[in-house]
Amino acid sequence: MAKKPGKSTKSSSGKSNRGRERDPDIKVTQENAPKKKSVGPVQFWNQVISEGKKVTWTSRNETFASTIMVLIMVVIMSLFFLLVDQLLRIVVQFILGL
Image (cartoon, rainbow, N blue to C red; front, side, top):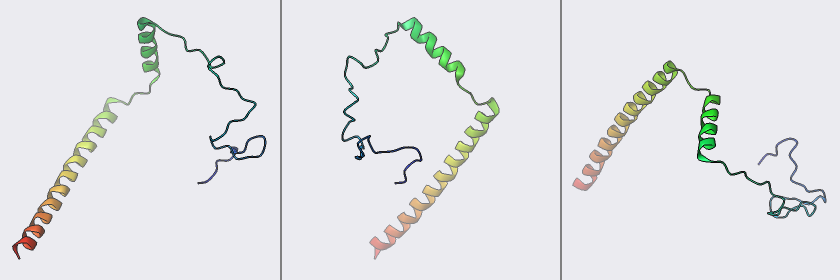
């Protein structure tokens, strides 16, 4: 697997550190972990609405075009699998009829 530039898997001691060992200078404990602030249902709902406003929604035309493309692909794939199924049925009937 290719390494990403600027990303080193070596610790300060020069050893490979791929999640098997931690740097001894870094201590991760429950006390120094960031505290998660509990929010009430009203504040949660307000945050949901705020995040929903940040989303870039597709236009009605893009949604309609995507829906039509999906329906066309469903019909094409249905016909393809129907054809393959019928061909396999004919082949199996021929083999079992021998």
